[in-house]
Image 1 (cartoon, rainbow, N blue to C red):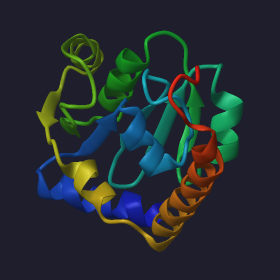
Image 2 (tube, helix red, strand yellow):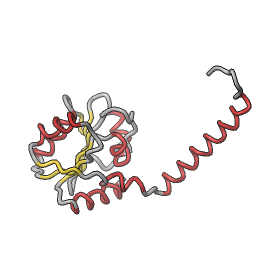
Image 3 (cartoon, rainbow, N blue to C red):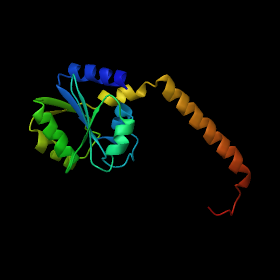
Length: 165
């Protein structure tokens, strides 16, 4: 994961920002290795040129400490977005990049309320990194496809008109 963080740090610096912040589950999973539901905010990531913070509440702390490497895992209480904003402010960050597709307008307002600095929309910082697959990712995709094809071969003879689910 370190190489992913290093690549993101380069992109953040090139965008003229001091940090990156994310509450977007797919981006956070890609960057940290934290496996969670992809349909709700379960963590916040703050990445600076020298530090990486993974913020989560008590429901996820034990799991995060087992799965997340290269990050300082902090258990927080209250609103994760506001706490992420407060961390940015406490670190003296002036401009933080974020993916505008990674959270709602209401979530953005909560992040901004805690931060007070400039939040700079950067759509492709993480998504472009995610497009390039590493060998392990390609191998996992191939294996998942192989398994799915095997299951389809097994159930195909059972499929016929009128069969209920």
